Amino acid sequence: MGFKVPTLIQAQAIPVILSGKHVLVNAATGTGKTVAYLAPVIHHLQKYDPRIQRSDGTFGISILVATPGRLLDHLKNTSSFSYSSLRWIIFDEADRILELGFGKDIEEILDLLGSRHNKPHSKENANSSISEFQRQNLLLSATLNEKVNNLAKMSLENPITIGIDDKKLPMSLPLEGLESFGSDVSCDELEHSGNIVSSSNEEYKLPSQLVQRYVKVPCGSRLVILLSVLKSLFDRESSNKIVVFFSTCDAVDFHYSLLSEFRSIPSSQPEAELKQLFVKCKIFRLHGSMKHEDRRTTFQSFKKEESALLLSTDVAARGLDFPKVRCIIQYDSPGEATEYVHRVGRTARLEERGDSLLFLQPVEMDYLQHLEKHGVSLMEYPLLKVLDSFPLYGQKHHVKKFVSIEMHPWVLTLQKTLEFFVLAEARMKKLAKDAFCSWIRAYTAHRGELKRIFMVKKLHLGHVAKSFALKEQPSLVGQSFQMQKKKRKGDPKHRGLSKKRRDTSKS
Ligand SMILES: Nc1ncnc2c1ncn2[C@@H]1O[C@H](COP(=O)(O)OP(=O)(O)OP(=O)(O)O)[C@@H](O)[C@H]1O
Image 1 (cartoon, rainbow, N blue to C red):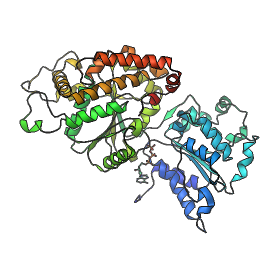
Image 2 (cartoon, rainbow, N blue to C red; image 1 turned 45 degrees about the vertical axis):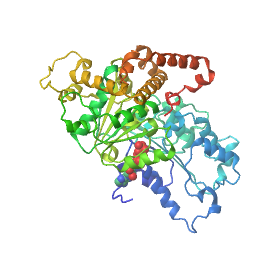
Image 3 (cartoon, protein in one colour; image 1 turned 90 degrees about the vertical axis):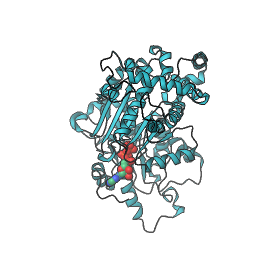
Image 4 (cartoon, rainbow, N blue to C red; image 1 turned 120 degrees about the vertical axis):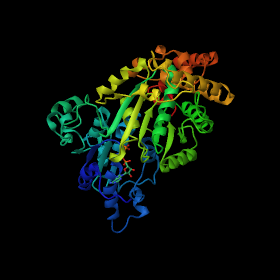
């Protein structure tokens, strides 16, 4: 692959993984975790003599990449699925696997594979001799929390921990010796004994060179500010790569069409400029409702571009590796702090520089404290300076002192121009309305502590409409939202569904 030297985490992890021990790796996004576990595995696989044959089973296809549900299905129902030579079980994005509710599946998988070590007397564990090879389990995560601890307890035997801040470990002890406590020891006992990371100490690893900012934007000015920030970023550096995260597919579609077509600039720009896009860059979109092929094309194209803008749902928040992304904008808030970490992790990869910007409305400012609880702190973005930098027709020396962002002459003019643009075309208006509806639905789907911060009741729906360049909240939209609310309340299927915000706001 042309790599000259290992990354730090690779230098630490590869020798340990080669030694055959169980390993828990906790390292920031974009630090090269994938190669950290793949290089040792491939190294071992290549050493086999005679070379691996298809008849050797799973180990013949060498490496199987699976989701828990489908793997379990094959383990139970596919008689030709042979795994007697299985040597490694690797959990990448470990926290997410459990967050998505795959805990039970994982337990069953580990039982069936005879790899669940803290259940010494169970019937299933009789299978542990199933493999003729010494098993090695690896667990990798950019975030460390109770769920990861649980999976570690379940799957790792005498593990070596890599990348875990010793200070975060009570009594500075690694996970070594975990299995000796047996199955009837509770998580609490393990924590007190100092043999496991405290579950209250959630740890998020962020690249140290990442500059994280937030911008406080009144609801009705959100769209104008987004466009202004993007314009300022692309005007300042002609070669720029930016990802903007939205909460729903409809929101991505609306903003994609708007940014791909909107050319007007408020007041006095020279004629020639009017022919150019307002935000001058190549624009891509990515979301779960797109065809697989289209998603693949977008992914490949954005990867290759030197300068481009990607509008995406959380479908791109994890694991996707786009080189040279300079800035991540979280236009719609991410929900759980874990998701924040993974979204910003799409930039500042491999020691490169990177910026992130989180949009928050004044009523959502408590989210900063939520992030701080997890050790993530953000600086304020100099919004006024950016707004003041835009020239306005016939208002070269516009008054600099004004009361609020909403009343800034640039914001007022651009908002009007955008509303005019959206209303002028039925297709744009429909996209805006659909985006408005699904945005509200996604907003109501926040759960737990976040429900207190992101309360739809605190929002002025007319202002939300403005953020989709709609002059007013269309009554039809209000009704359909009410219907949705009723439906969700009454329908048990909907109730069950909304455990996670991501589930309801189809990404
Ligand atoms: N030793 C190396 N030298 C140069 N580039 C590397 C090296 N190792 C990995 N890379 C590249 O670094 C990028 C990030 O690696 P990778 O995607 O594995 O990170 P990660 O830690 O798994 O991130 P995430 O947690 O976001 O999934 C990839 O483009 C990868 O090809």
